[in-house]
Image (tube, rainbow, N blue to C red; front, side, top):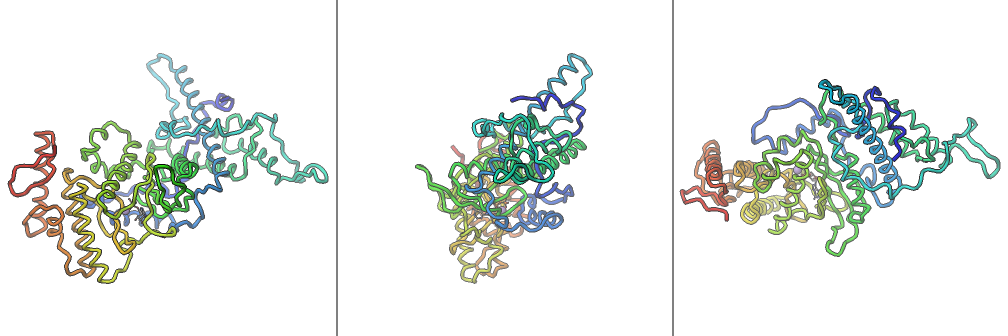
Length: 515
Ligand code: ADP
Ligand code: MN
């Protein structure tokens, strides 16, 4: 690519833009709240914190309020925009490469060196993304045609009779937009597009302009304090590209809108596309996008780094890859559950941090959470026994503890309970697996006891019923202590033998090993 615009830019250009548009959630609040280990993963707490944040900054998200998010029909402009954005990214990269060359030239072998880092366009967490790009060279048409963009005179039209061209003419307007790109911001590199006969549609132009301004603001913020994690958002350009590809490939027909925005993920509704030879796509899908926000996931490290299935990989990965592992973990856990016949979403596809699964609900309306639905006492009892059964299956057949089980992660659909949100689920032999199970039991017992199910076991009875353990302590504190003692025994055993117990045994039997 020609680098006219790149070479012309001096490093004293000041703070410039990088690759990010406006954050729909704003910067995460920095206020922190102390909480117990048990609260760290509590969805309820997460929801409360999130609500506070949202109330402060944003109006409620209405499902599909803004019409289709990405469809097969409107790909025209979105692909234009996408291409334009990627073009911009390419310019920024070249600019940075040039900057690095100059930096090297100036510093040479000198012991004292100056850094141009603050003038880079592409910020660190954007820089490992080359694999995400589509080959736009193949899809654009030749822009090298006319010499200079032409503009219309003040009176608003040129020509005569049926050859009149007004300022609204698509071609003229497109050229004008290209010329106006120069005015975005002094530091915004627009490359050599100005000299080409590029015709930007108003929509693309406006989006780029918006991008230029928000980049400027963001970049200024970044340079103020080196805190890259504040500027993230869920659907960044790269995620949008992944979603776009899913529609483009025909796997999805339309992405209609957002169902839920949580601390760690955003969930969209989509209509399924065409079946392939080996795969039937459900008519309606849920797309869970794990936020590429690094700081929110720190709390959850322990769920994955102590899970021996992922342990070896964990230490070698960068934060972006770790987030992909959450999506991967959810996929594996859902598959196990599916195999055991537990009602849960069916995995359709996993692409990086984007998980597509079947939609629980109908006609874009997600099934209500148990916390939001009013059940007859008969259904309530039915739901309780079903959950008791599912918890046992999960533990015994899937060898999993949900670890965030509550009325927030159970949906009521088709007269039964469906389990969702299993990215944090762990094996029972996880160092805190039994504690997580106990917390799940507490949530479930409390919900059904409050809901008037007289048969509902208390949390300790439920724990024993699910795990098959026989912890006899008759109060919460002692019970908890016994659980921790069991976990410690397992850990010690791992230290000594490098293997985990597949089953916990509380009655003095020799440990049973997992071969
Ligand atoms: P998190 O709580 O971590 O944000 P969840 O997996 O619980 O993520 O999804 C958030 C919300 O999105 C759920 O409470 C539910 O309302 C909706 N949702 C998630 N997956 C599905 C699905 N497969 N079908 C229907 N709704 C879903
Ligand atoms: Mn959830």
